[in-house]
Length: 292
Length: 283
Image (tube, rainbow over all chains, first blue to last red):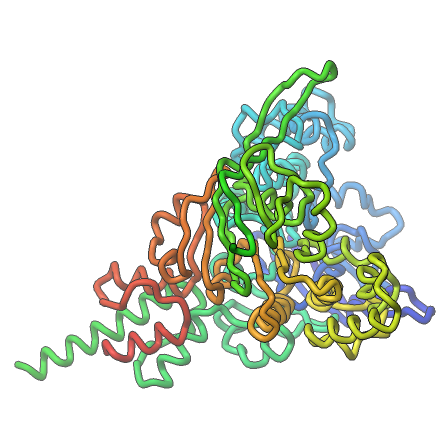
């Protein structure tokens, strides 16, 4: 079970004066149950890339295989693929349109042809899993706060029971608590349902904290693909392409430069804290030994 | 008198049913007092729905007080005669750059504001040049805005406000949709306008890191101002901020956790440099 992208190229406005190659020779294998982050500057091809994963955009050349099947085959059911690969767009709450939150979440399964009862059951489960309090289910989406609306919109995608969840900057515009809530929710879906999650983000701190594998896009190509620790070790190169490493990664480099042996490439607050505490306790132990 | 003075400013969003009966009242601003001096850099923090954007809209008279008073540049926002003066003195930049750009060439977009208020043509071009230079976008003057990055578009939007020669700029989450580079570009441009041109800046944001360079910070919750002080004083109160659904910069949080774990770094560390220095002194 996997998604394979084989030499995928995508060109916008081909053969016009505005021709732009948005994706250049992308080769990727996305394994079942991975939690992947995608980072890259504006216009690096992140959004174009994820729109290929459920066939919303068709590659100009190259192939995409979902569980071994070529999604560009004439008899391939793209509609089914869109149920399996759930895409949460940027500002998904702008797409809420029904009179109540519950009706909105039912729309997807109803549209796929499920009976009213089945659709409602799926909506119920989805709204539960995003932890939106039942008080809000029968209200107009407009009455919800930013974070609640976003959770309702994610529930709309979860109601399709996707195997892969792709989120394009799901925390943009949310307050810090709202950001944590959405990301914790996504991490929980990954942990408890072994769902494959692909998270597009502008926050280096967020991807460092949550994902297992990090893909860096630059001008339509994959620049790095590895664990956050591996990728953020290239912090100088990342800066050159308009990105950065998490603040704590820089801190550790600066501490080492100043002679504090804080080991490891820390990418999260917890790693940095442990590393600094260790350096201090070693020093402390050494001075105690000397005193003896 | 301060450049901005709010006294017990109230704003109510009133919902009415089909028969015009009041269905519900949401108090978005609840007796807010705000004082901003000319040339100050003030940041406003608060969770979604805390009233920040409602406050911003009052500063530029997109909304009028339901109660209390607000003076901007010495003028009462309630008085309709002051409307255009206030809007000219206090410009706004919103979250989404794509919603604010209207022309097909960068310099024409920047020229729109002054042209709209009848500034003579030669003067308009001077202002366009000055505005674009002030945000480092002069080399893009003849470009099409839709080919610019998010950070560049947002800087064009700021240049458009600068062309109105305002005394104050209100920015409502100007970096929410930008990548790290875009965020840095916009903040640097804003910081420069404040430092070099003495423009009063009111920055509304959800990114705690962006608040560090402000002179003062206001924290809003449920339509009220619940905290105010220097960034250092505000970010020293980690637990209080968390109770308002906010956070502190990652470095500040790391320093706080190190303190709790027994490394006596001082309170209210804001920058990487400060933490490095503090740890080197202790080591």
